[in-house]
Length: 120
Image 1 (cartoon, rainbow, N blue to C red):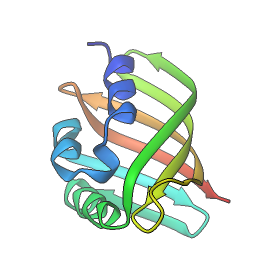
Image 2 (cartoon, rainbow, N blue to C red):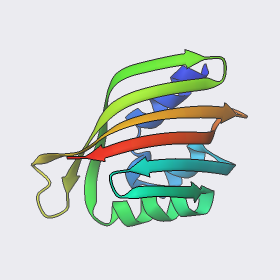
Image 3 (cartoon, rainbow, N blue to C red):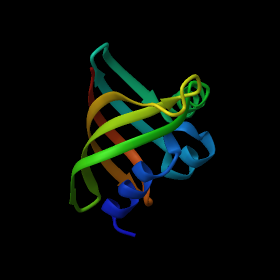
Image 4 (cartoon, helix red, strand yellow):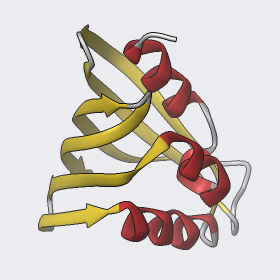
């Protein structure tokens, strides 16, 4: 699979709410630099898996609606809107955030991420 296909597959999967699936996509040395509405945070493999476990306790569904995806060699840029369904109200899809991320892949896994998000 190309880098773009791997990233597309990641965002179409349940990786955001399933730590087992998340582990399949992340490189063991993964680092994510994340600038959000709340500020800056750097996350490693373990903290991303822990975040996924936390998210899985609140949401039954997570969906990334990709509007743009661009590939150059082993780097993929993605712009998407993130939607979720909560455990309390699984029938209602709620908008969570707009996200722009650049992923560098290594060994066909997500290795370095540079993300900006805006919660609405």
